[in-house]
Length: 178
Image 1 (cartoon, rainbow, N blue to C red):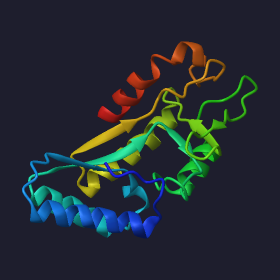
Image 2 (cartoon, one colour):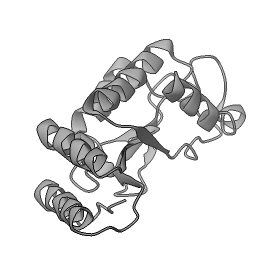
Image 3 (cartoon, rainbow, N blue to C red):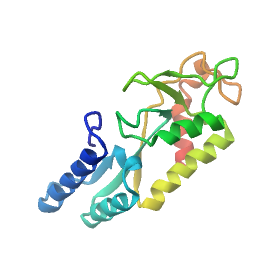
Image 4 (cartoon, rainbow, N blue to C red):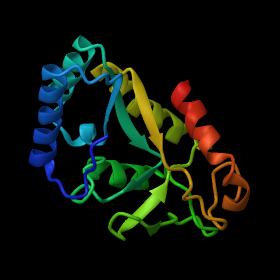
């Protein structure tokens, strides 16, 4: 997996291309390749990368995380609109008063929010993200995070963060598998 914190979209895409060139030139015994920044890359390039990996017998793995954040300029993990979309549609955990529950993103300190996998609309939205990865040709996913559930968060099914904390990752993986 390529780290993204020091990259911009162009340097990240170039690093993926460098990795592919090295994989194509050498028999390195690599069986899978995960790239986090696929969601901010040009879709035609993602499809090309996946096809080239498969041509080398390497399983292409795409990355997704269980929270949204406006950190597209610092991590390249997801497009900025994913954060605003999830907030505006209410796909995230809330405070006891029903407002979005924000916590500081560990990458840049800006607002982040945990996806509410007890909200049926959020589940369908998440599945659409997974289907996009499958449609691009991904053979696997790196489901990341899940440990950000905080005790006083509220979820649509009435569960508090204190109760949801250990259940959250299981829900994320169940929804992804579906």
